Length: 143
Image (cartoon, one colour):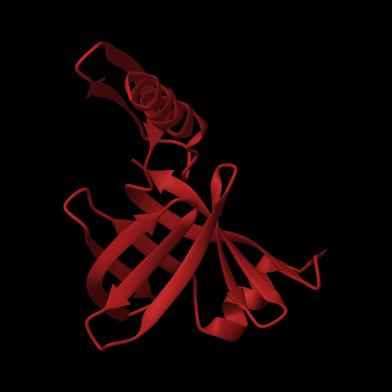
């Protein structure tokens, strides 16, 4: 039974070491798993999406688009601010929205106060919002 707990503890530590969220804002998290026979303790770097993000690129069918033309078509740049407490604020030109957000691995879900949901995925140092065959690529502008 002790070997199973040690294996489980090692697995938890390995998963935490492999976690990759949005990049940028890094926090250290200490993980401690205790069993009757032994104690495993390790520090893993956890990435979060906390900060302000705005569209800096766009692709359609994986071909780069002129981002200025895409923003003009949308009516302006979309800016998302994700706060540490799980709340969010978004803005396109003079229109704004608020709500909450949650991260599950590489997927970030924004729950807007009007009931809509926006799903983004993290990829390296960016957030990607897919709209059909078009991808809007957000980069962090502020911590």
